[in-house]
Length: 155
Image (cartoon, rainbow, N blue to C red; front, side):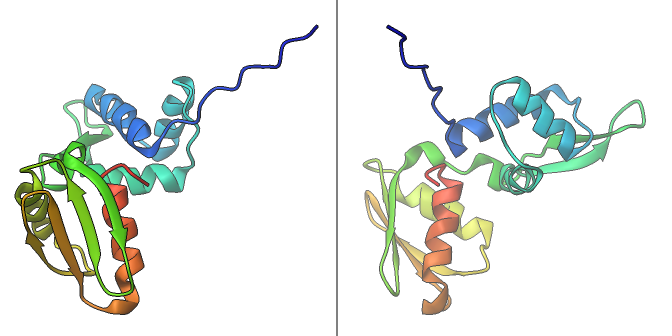
């Protein structure tokens, strides 16, 4: 009797970004295609456009290294340090986004969301474990929720 082939689980966006961050810390990738290939070597399939979005989200920039070659590096901006591990869920209705956090973590999450200056975010109100993210337009509520989920690694 043949056993069914074991399928490997598809890595989450959070896992992909974690691995990408490790690759970037090595300082050897000069193109997005190289990053796609390095991720593939580690068992993570990604497209160039996905890597491009992840680089932006992680705060990576292309710089000239000490040898004069272009490489992607992580910069210490707010985007790279978003407290994704504090976010539990992100939900929305037609006009607001509710971000549930671990107890006592809503204020740091709200501060970081405000610091990111997301184009669809008007502002935040934080409680103890809940952040109310108010969109600039109710037509963009779903997009704002999607963006926050992406930042939190829940997409």
